[in-house]
Image 1 (tube, rainbow, N blue to C red):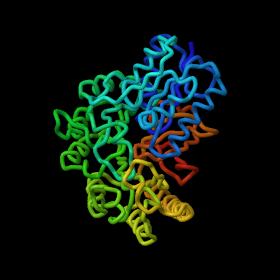
Image 2: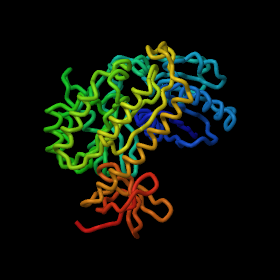
Image 3: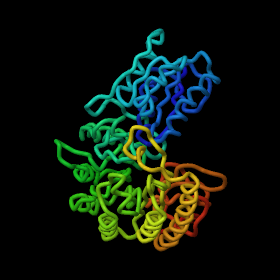
Image 4: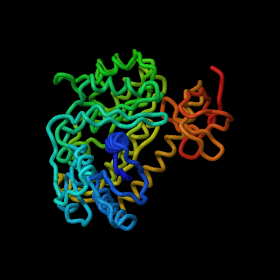
Length: 420
């Protein structure tokens, strides 16, 4: 029988969907991820914005058109937030929220169940989901939940408080991956809070991974996690990618305060300087929310100025999306037209910063992990996360090639193979 798993949202959701797929395939099910006719559908939902939650429900409507008689199972943040809205949809057989996703498999196995059940979030890390292997890069989830309670975000209410995965479990999964993939990305809702026995321990995990024959990449970090212990561990690793995604959200201190972000722009800048002391031209990427409630033109200009000062290699730009139930939803909102104008300005700056960073990286060589062939190019990412388009013959996926960066191209850069 066939199960279709549709995933919306973040890399954590993708990891959890891959884990469900892995378990189902072991039971003999055919599993797909594109919307096509199937016996069962699993929809792993997102609630980071109102639009994401709406899209999650729309996905179910599309499923019913493709497979009217299919049984539908819903999980993720949107169903944790609004389980009743999904329970009202005909065809939905089980709703699990963000935890106990493996129960979906039990319900698929017992497909005759008629009563809709709604499961609730647990307090411990759910350590029974292992994602299936990919061709080149694997995501390994080390943590779930969040303690930050930013004023614009529902995630701590939906995924619960931060919970860390047992380090032995993490190492066992990476051991199982090391012969099949070349890169592992450590991911979670907030990996900065990873702990062992209640103590901050991301640096301890890095130490254990230092000798692995894998390229290690970190998911999104909070600037406060870049401690002296972290820097020492990172500097000693030869296999850690010099790519650090530090969530900024705003370059204005007054906006950061309204967001309930626990740092200033000066502290953020100091963190970037520390990373640049131990790496030559590391990729510093970030997220910025545009049009946060009450954001003035002066505050937005502060963000533009600060982003330029830091010299990010890439900015992920998000127009603020109101979420009912958050503190920010009660604040004075910025007009939609103003938000769109500001997004455009930040996008223009982002393109200039990307090109400037790519030009800086033309010096020396870079190691690219080949992922696929697109048109006449082999495509992969460098250690500092530049998407490289390589016009060459006989390159193989899941292999490394040394290249020189030539110039900006499409969403990355043209690169040519070189001798080291």
